[in-house]
Length: 415
Image 1 (spheres, rainbow, N blue to C red):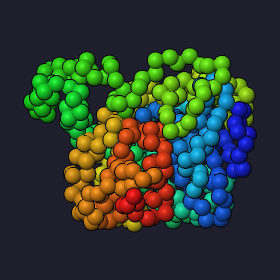
Image 2 (image 1 turned 180 degrees about the horizontal axis):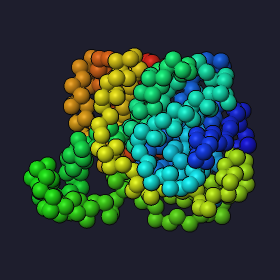
Image 3 (image 1 turned 90 degrees about the vertical axis):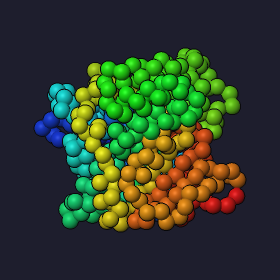
Image 4 (image 1 turned 30 degrees about the vertical axis):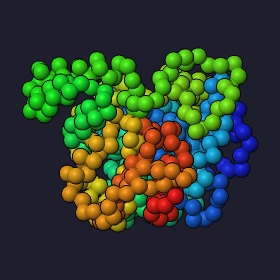
């Protein structure tokens, strides 16, 4: 039981897995079993991105079983939680994120994709030893944002080590993912211009000077974008309200539902997870870390290898597809941080062969978004009315997308 939670029938677990004993490196996890338990229900692994952001955001702000009330002390149910259908494992990775830690902290000075992927693989192997009933289950690796690196790289390691331990990898699902940063950057400015967020001159200057790498003038063009857009609106959801009052309330706000995402939810979540009784219940912060739990660690983001950020993940995606791993990439269409125009530019460079042409898909009697399917196990979908964190903004549509992928059925194409 978590403090302040409503009664539920499913089991939930939290704790640490030692990744590297000599370095004192431990990853924290939060695991929720499916509401409909059986011996074949899949195991879904979730990563938030950053790099440097906690996956407990996914658990308590997106598609986990609970959301945090505005009092920062009590929880309410999410009826569109992904554990309605599957078992979901949220991993705080790499060390230094959230409740995960390493000793000495200097180990973080050389952080990057390779070390993180290897640590994630060690975690999963050791976690399956702790929960052997999940060995042999269908496994899906999911995430968003910089998890566009984490998920395919972990999946690749599973393929390369399939003779060492049996992990039945079935698919990779990533939302608004960073896959090919240099290509995505161009699509970002196209998105901003086409949504009337930057001027014609700013867009023309970017096209003229940045695409052709005139660094000084390019910097001026990018600063114009910051001045015109990033200071004033949420780049992760251009139509969302901003949090204007982050003060906790004495009682939960009335009429709170998952259908109306509260822009101040980050404050509520941090307040909840930093309570001693919550940490005790979750078996978290057992070593009494000298800092509070935060959604993201910007120091890790700063230290991350620039080469890793720039590396394209598309060759790994193709390797996964060639080995029968299904891939679904989705985009909230109101995200300007990793926009659908950015992702579609990456897909165009992959030279995929269309198998089922662009068409609407439906959820709850409305257009949920648009989708296109390609040969060799690849699907792309947009989610209408969602930003960077799709399950936060559109929980029902996200659930429709998720369950269709897990059950390997087409997205609904009729009302």
